[in-house]
Image (cartoon, rainbow, N blue to C red; front, side, top):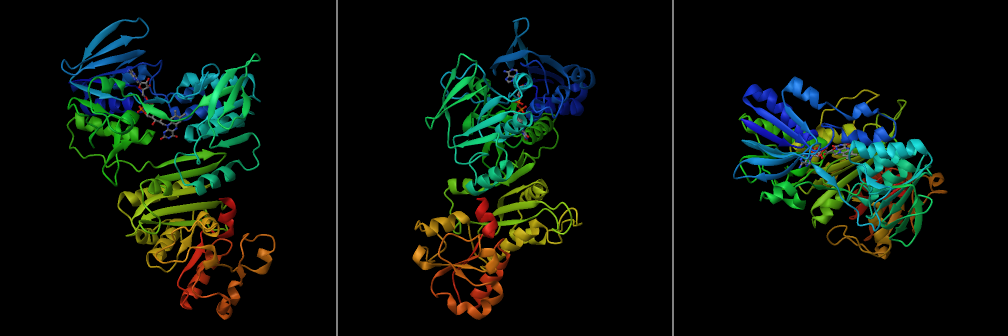
Length: 567
Ligand code: FAD
């Protein structure tokens, strides 16, 4: 069988090596890569700029090794120009010799990946480039080497933009990061986005955030700098402008060959990575991936997804027992100055964008806790948020922390894969030693809160909802729950000393928790009560006392004053 693979990075190389391991000499595998080198680690590029890794670390393997060890016929600097589906061949151009030839296939695998989206910036050419290939990283690294205190503009607050920013700053530069949206890391939870930005770059003057701002124009000045005109009308001079504003799948080969495309022009595939042509497979960033919840095909541009799809396609081509890939939740993490933001599944904003309403269609539980028991040295703050449907089934989770955020998200992603509910989370058996966690792990604790919410033993109000409530924006708190400022009592149950210089800027009733049982008559009846403490723990006890006393609508301010200040 002759198998032609187009594209030689994560998805293409993984497909080729798995095929050769499975089929040995019964498969002739030819791999075309239009770039200089195959199998480079895109995720290492920002760290190479920051001198954290050496250039050799960018390359996982070489064409020579793939030929010699695996027997794959690798052709670098060869671009596939078109596909003739009837004749089952591709037209290829040798970019070194300009020779054009055809190569026939029994099975074709498209692993052409994605490419950085071009910015609609006038004059966006010189000193402006993406960070996408080793050559781009060489260019930015050379610029930083030549002038360590340079200023770089970065367009896009996704993982690539953030990681590049950190590495430029690590070398001595200043970064202006332009994000046209309200949040970083895509359409996300504004509270978590603000929390992450503040916590990661507080006290770092060389990271300048320009949120809800885009670059309209870039002009080269006589002194070689780029003059940027921003959407705000402001102007700003930078040495370089890096585009990290998202990617688009390279699906033009497939489109021109008449293959069916899916959302955002990715190539539509099934769970075995087959396209609309039974002889053609597509894998990696260029292909759709199955949503494990809805079963819909959608883009998913992550390295982990690419290599799993590669294995799936190779198994299907080799005729192994087919077991369709269930798809991934988009589990991912980004690190900024040592603070990690890990997530899996849906975030609150994606649920809202789907038209779902909090308290009607889904709930959330958020805790601010410690990565391991607070009494053991080295415990770091950890924020953990889960979203679940009205039956308690987990929909997604996000964690922010300097330690243990990835572990919690990996547990939650695994639990979600098997359809876990908040009750399951409360019961999960997780390892505990003082260095690693707590007898009640944060995953168990969000599960407990989730259970409490499901049983109406606790109700929560998010900081933004409280702000909206007090501004008269009437957020939905539940059926027939009073939601206007005059119908709300804010009850602070901390000690007087804690309120001295840290209190909500709204009228409030102050009753320390220890006195609450004797003083509930000071709280007006028939109103919505919002209970506030430092982290939410005392407020939970207070809410149970009030509920026991017949108060119907009692809400705990999520994360207490600590979270209020950070969002
Ligand atoms: P690509 O890596 O895009 O490779 C496709 C290859 O196909 C390219 O080399 C291209 O030259 C070649 N090609 C295209 N068209 C043709 C043609 N017509 N003929 C011949 N060759 C062709 N993901 C994570 O999960 N975690 C991370 O931390 C992470 N960090 C990243 C950091 C950076 C800076 C970047 C850029 C990406 C990062 N990613 C990360 C994303 C991850 O790298 C991609 O999901 C992954 O590389 C996709 O692999 P792929 O093989 O599908 O596509």
